Image 1 (cartoon, rainbow, N blue to C red):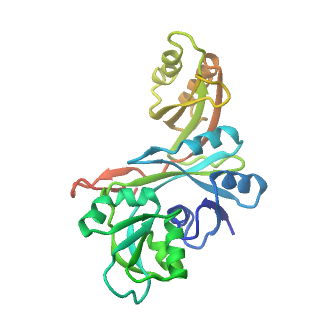
Image 2: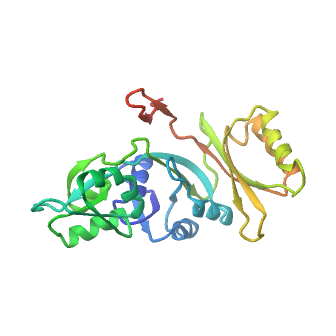
Length: 286
């Protein structure tokens, strides 16, 4: 059975992402930190790791990109998880809710809902952790914000669902693993590179893709942790590195860059499409 490492307690949104990608019966390995995910895959304790890399409202998760640069694991896939926050209570909870616990980011993403109901927000170390702790020590008038999976894992009741302020709240995950993934009909490629500190170096590096009609879907700079005031550039692009135009662009980039690291070519997640109902975005089934 495939084992996938994720960060957080059982019931975390990251575990939801694992089940969405690999199926409900996948074996999951909770890890305390992102570093432990990479160590688990490196050591063989897990076959893959699910690492969040960016959120549609909060932006990139820098720690994940730093670890991708430091380790030799390859990206085997991507997951787009719609984050649906739920208000959970202990079974038989008596009296009105007055206090809501969760991770600070989840509380912030439900701020309007909490203010509207005049609930006191109490930061907790983790969304699933808040559910686990409430199930272990039920308190009247206390609820938590966590996933539907957390409610199932810890036997809590869903008092309200879909309470996030922004419905278009997605988190993108990379599936990291050893070796190379198999090519797929629709692939993306991720890589990181640095250029010499000379005029036009970045312009000419990116031109290697533009002149070959390679579409870049993400471009972001990050400081080089071992060289102050120097930067690396993370790129996502459409296509597989073995495609003739992508391969030629990468070879051209190698001739212009100070270094290049291919993070992987992998099956792309299903695209998002606005459905026209309240401007909400859903996964497009193809």
